[in-house]
Amino acid sequence: MSTQAIAVVASDVVAGLLGAGFNGAVRLPGEPEYDEQRRSVIPSVDSRPLAVVEAYSRTDIQAAVRTAREYGVPLAVQATGHGTRVPADGGILLKTTAMTSVLIDPERRIAKVAPGARWGAVLDAARQFGLAPLSGSHRDVGVTGYTLGGGVGWLARKYGFAADSVIRAEVVTADGRTVTASADQHPDLFWAIRGGTGNFGVVTSLEFRLYPVREVHAGIVYYGIDRAAAILRRYRDWTATIPNELSTAVVLTRIPGTEQRAVATKVLYAGPADVAEHLLKPLFETAGPRLAGELRTIEYADAAMGGTPARHLDFLDTLTDEVIDTVTELEDATVEVRHWGGAMAHPGPAAGPVGHRAASYSLIIDREVADLPNSGRTFVNFLGDPDRADTAYSPADLRRLRAVKRTYDPANFFHLNANIRP
Image (cartoon, rainbow, N blue to C red):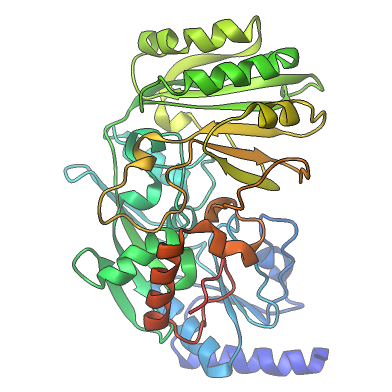
């Protein structure tokens, strides 16, 4: 499409937005801030939309949806950009970054957030009441995308996935209507969005439970890389004995600020330090001398420990010797083995379609590894290839998700995502 044609289409879209009652910011190609605003956190996503529109309200979101449909252009939704997987080339990139309100109801232990809120704001608001959300590994990650994709954080073994904590959402559907999704209103949609991500509409507000967690014993400690195989074998046996309050991961990586390879053990225990140290003793005795790092009793809001970029992701029912031998021979890769289970594996009867709940471990590597066996299972939050979205769900859940999609978005208007086809 020529530059002149793009300008004509873009001007039509702007006119449509204004006519639909849009009051947010619009940035077109060639204008200041267009390039900055179109970017995703993920470098491989180089989106070239006709317009970047920043919503300030639910009305703005409705206007963007209706305009995209009227002019037949695709629409992608972006809050912080961490979950953006498909570029909005030739369409509208709808940003909710400016909608950041966070409200805490300490009596009911509930948070209500706007679609652009980040976990850091929720953590800081909830900590004043001794409460915690089921947040992710980084404070700057957006709440909505993370939660709708499932959301596995450091309290997940104790309380479940972030999606399991959702009690209510407001959603703008493909026809521009706003509906409330809860156990009592549009229960099919409520089920689907709690793991089915943005396939069914644009979430304009989200309500979820908070939990009575103020302090945790947490941190990262580093051990010699020569102990990697022994640590992972001990980890395999040890994780079968620990309580749900204890969440851990073993990472083959480098000590920060150095080129020294090491085995990092990430730990968060939702309880007293002395109990945590007692539980960890068998693992740490196998690990040998500590090279760096420490565990401390800190507020949960300060306990973010980061994650590993997922070029290779698999779920393991057991940590086999073959897997251990293969990953410990990778000299330059970052490898994370994370313990799952606990409350994640025991959802309530009305829980959403978060996939592969019964897995014992996740295996994440920051590069592709051909020699590893792969179950083919994925997880929406870690999905590198959006065309593999179907593998994030069980066959039964996928059939049900497609049925809900046919009800709320039969034309697959919301498809620039980890798409579930009608």
